[in-house]
Length: 107
Image (cartoon, rainbow, N blue to C red; front, side, top):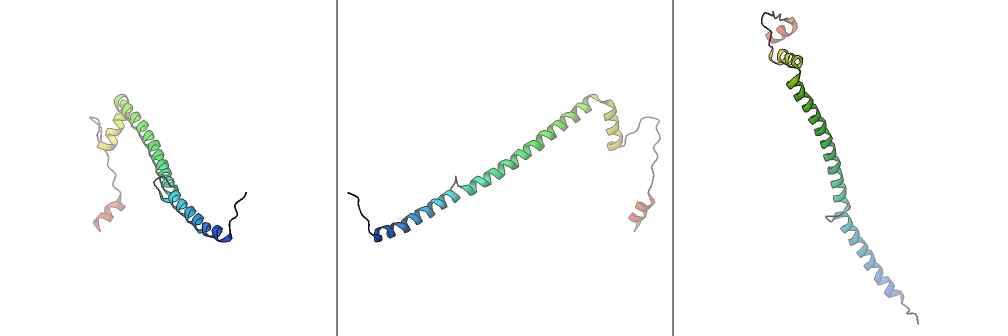
């Protein structure tokens, strides 16, 4: 025989169900395994992947530079001339003064 519930019993269960759903939603959003934490971790994961890509590109560039420094004499000469202002014996160096920059430093 079916059990009949009166209206008072079903009305008193409604706030409990709403409260339980609200608590479940809060747990889903704010717990250690919640959605907000998941979005934060996903954003951090994407940032780290980007950093890894950049570092791999830097590593390739550094290996290329290392190889050139070990084997390419023209590259070494170019660096010596540009960075350290070195010249070969017997070469003459001509320095060009830009009057605009000389006047700016005098002011």
